[in-house]
Length: 169
Image: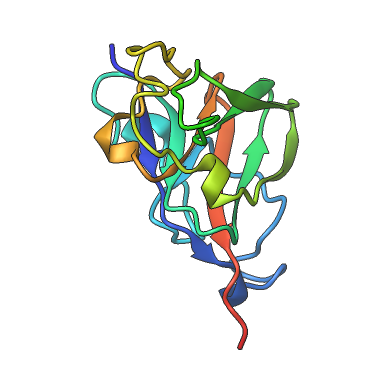
């Protein structure tokens, strides 16, 4: 069984209100991921495009520094592992992450995260080779290179959506 991450597209925070038909906030959705950035539905973890016979235990996204991952968690507590992509002195390190405990029946935001520290510079750090250990969601792989990766201990009652602010000139 192979663990994978789902690539997600952000929802523009500037397009939606905090109330109304498509609100932002603490609405109890079904467990899953809004991978397409629709701000309306959550696709169940086992029905995501990345699902290939193994559990989807994380998400990955093209981080520009103005994005955060909204979550709603149901009855089962979990943890989020925000994988650190920056190497110390250019040397591959063992698996390293920030861990955030997500309580049962809670909601909140993860991020925003610095692209220079959290985007995966290469796949060796979490590849399980060259001294790097494997991440909870499995190896980063070529598909995750250059992206910010967040893994979860479990996804049975977890819903996530990526938001981003628009730029103001």
